[in-house]
Image (cartoon, rainbow, N blue to C red; front, side, top):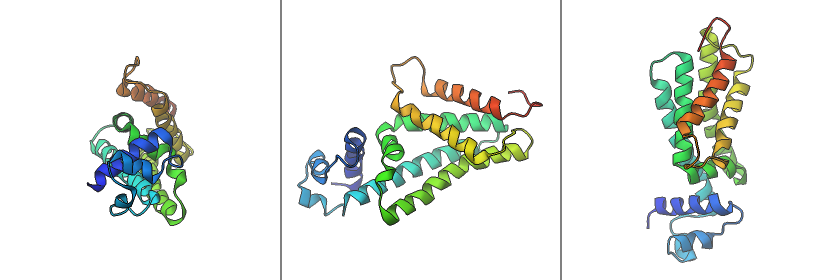
Length: 191
């Protein structure tokens, strides 16, 4: 039994039942272990949650950094990052649900550890918007607030998005990007 299989099972259960309604017995049963045997691999439900949150953040940070590393004009770079992020959320729906909705269940130092990583991810977006402002492409008095609005819009998508629906994640991200970027552009720049 690998720790990764345990984490995958826990992500699935957390995303369906929620962290607090999930027991260690639920996780053990999902991976065909006795509860006592599960503790040979994992020390606590808090450890599982933090590991899942770290895994999710590592994934989205890597994907968004890759999208932002491509040389392109600021509006296109931001659009590309938004598309990549939303595609990643949808492709990893269970892990994304844990990241977006269960982080509040972390306690004490684990919550603080997570917050540092989460803030690093948010800073990617804020810095991209600030760079556009510095270059005279975007106008924005509060890049941090704009970044939170952007993330809030995209994060909430996993609650209603359906693969069989009328729009793909790329189309939805493009719609969001159009709204946000057109609101950020200076009057001199046309998207």
